[in-house]
Amino acid sequence: MFKKILIANRSEIAVRIIRACHEMNIEAVAVYSDADRNALHVRMADEAYYLGTPQPSESYLNMDRIIDIARACSADAVHPGYGFLAENTEFAKKIGDTGISFIGPSPESVKAMGDKIRARRLAKSAGVTIVPGTIDPLPDTSTAKRAADEIGYPVMIKAVSGGGGKGMRLVEGEKHLASAFERASSEALSAFGDGSLYMEKLIKDPRHIEFQILGDRYGNMVHLNERECSIQRKHQKLIEESPSPVMTPEKREKVGAMAVAAAKAAGYYNAGTIEFIMDGRGDLYFMEMNTRLQVEHPVTELVTGIDIVKEQIRIANGDRLTFKQADIGLSGSAIECRIVAEDPAFDFAPTPGRIMFLREPEGAGVRVDSGVYEGFEVPGWYDSLIAKLQTYGKNRQEAIARMQRALDEYRIIGISTTIPLYRWLLRHKRFIQGDMNTGFLDQEMIGFTDDAPQLWVMAAIAVSLSSMGNKGDSSVHIQGASPSKWKTTGRVSSLR
Image 1 (tube, helix red, strand yellow):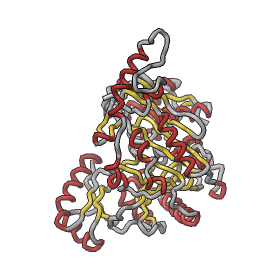
Image 2: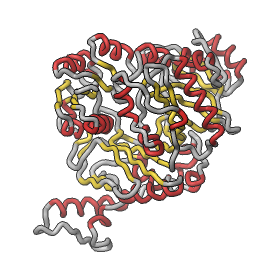
Image 3: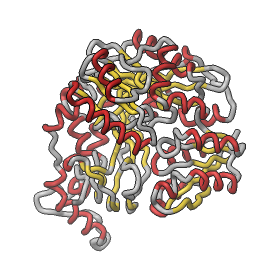
Image 4: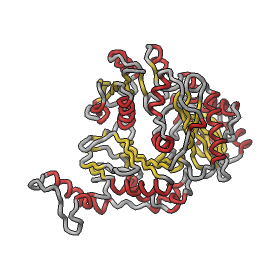
């Protein structure tokens, strides 16, 4: 087994991987930028090495610097986490060329499934149902018009090398196609260095359902059931759960087999995710594959009992899977809320800054994967995800009840977060009933109200008085409020 692993990432995912390493008696090496000198992942690692200035290109995207550090510290392997260099084929190849193991799939598989056109072809060849559309890049607008006429409007134009909603445009009719094509191509070229586009039929109000897969280097492949990821904003997931409230055992078996077939067609190994969209009839279509660990992997761990990060490490070490598909269980229900340093009341504006007060929820069925602590300065250079809150229950109703309770316990003061949005959403009738799609927030968020603005002044006074010590008495008494400090600072996510 590996003796030392370098984590080429930061924040909560680096902390998550460090914990897995320590449980496996493996030394964990952190890297950091100037903005992360005091970050939690740096404090928890066995060793930590400076990368560079806060700019990602000078730090977490500086592959040569990361490889030099891996060599210098005698790391056996590198785990990329997600984001940054996780799906960079050049990085994976460079790591392999040094003789250091890359904890992830082969560069060839990443390249195959990262190209959306090639991925669609591979999936189709494996008998997987794909969204109706083109399987070749669209060279120009005239070709795009012919394709749209054949597919039927409305259509989606997407970047061949895309992700995260970049290089994507909805086209309702022919008069909008040329301008949408040009804008999408320009955006894709800027974001990915590749302006190539393809086209799919628009699936209206779809659900987003994905299957976690695991495979070793010897051809053994399993899926770990599905995750529902339909609560999104601008194609960015906010809430995930497993199992999906609309998935039947028969459909799970059928679509899970398709996910495994798609991954095998790419010669895939390690952890990955096959993403599908579900139409109003309940039919699922292959959308794409993420060739890395997913943000939302903890909900799958909670309902299967399988530690996905540890399995990643074992597979990269050359071990075989120790379980077969028949051994994969599905017990209870799990939900995850992404705690993001953004203000949902102000169009999700980023809110970097110092965390003045922090109390994370605890208790039965609660897990927090966090990358911050009280006093930490959340930098504005990187993704605004600061923590992930998961709850587990014997059924979906209990998982929701525990999430409602955990969100009410969560205290973050100093920055705005998405916690107030989740408090509202987890009590929304449609969510509780499992009636959701990727347009849920667009349809329902007009009903969202943030209670923080009415209480932020009170919270500021409470924190200030508490920090003064008040002669050793940490309780705060404010007229019109409960004498309990937790009550006076509760249900607040920000100081504006």
